Length: 91
Image (cartoon, rainbow, N blue to C red; front, side, top):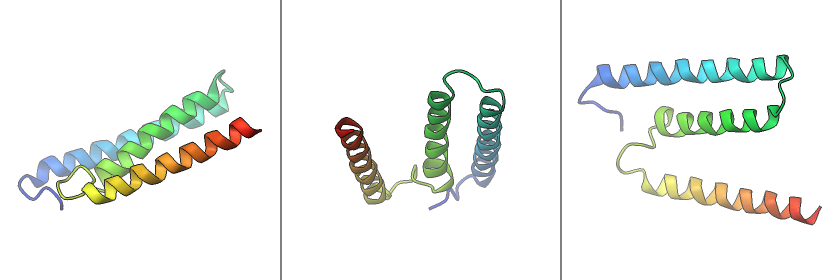
């Protein structure tokens, strides 16, 4: 369900999000290339931003009528997080 009411606004949003994704990717490469301290938390933070951009902008989960896909994505992410934390605790 794309925003058919204002295609120019939608195109600017898509283009801006794409450029931001590229910038975040370049930042991640720079963090690793220069062996910056706390690289893993920085990369994870950048990854969370990338996931948000991918799901809500490019996959159009911000549109009305996407409640069930959002529910299943959040449920799956929750189960994965709980599983990962459980394995970390057991180790």
